[in-house]
Length: 289
Image 1 (cartoon, one colour):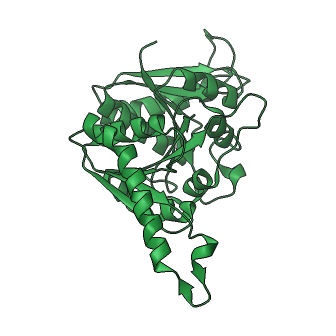
Image 2 (cartoon, rainbow, N blue to C red):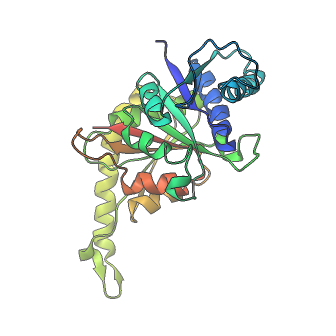
């Protein structure tokens, strides 16, 4: 199958905002956009029934309306629709394996169970083998937010491989022709905390060591993407707080998720959780080893 950006639709304002964002992304990357709506009660096609008795009528209407809106904004974009008679989570996970990225709507600050299509988006984010982007929108919003044109921020831990994460972040910045900001947060260790404050000699050594590591990690990617303007930030704060703060005004925040063996329960780390709940911009969660 040719490379695609897949977006999950459920008719909510958040999923429609995700579809608009995904269309912009597909056009930037010269990819096909796939609109996907899954529901176990869909019946096999073709159905040649009047709309009042067609069990698939509302699903078809949802797909048609979204496709019409997108193609009015992107007349040259190839858009395909998929109506799938299956559980939404399973359908999205299968589609994700065939996609450059999967895009879902999110209500952000609400409880986990209020995410896109009920409790679907979080398991998809936690289990997908390819990047998943969560896009939120205020109810009724029809246009991208001002932050949609900002730079790309990527959160880095500096231990273990992060090539998949950086490949996605740099490619995203290059596609948008915007800068990339690499952020590393590191909590101040207990031995640097004194009764009267912080031992600045220790913290300066920590900051210097972290900046050296970050520079080494970024060097090959700077060479691969010479036209991407790269900045780095070392924050002596909890990684989650540092990343959410750095994402203010960004066009996209990219965070990682460790892949897990089949026997382990898929989960998101504290940085990804904080980003999904609190960042105002679209959040891309990229699985990596």
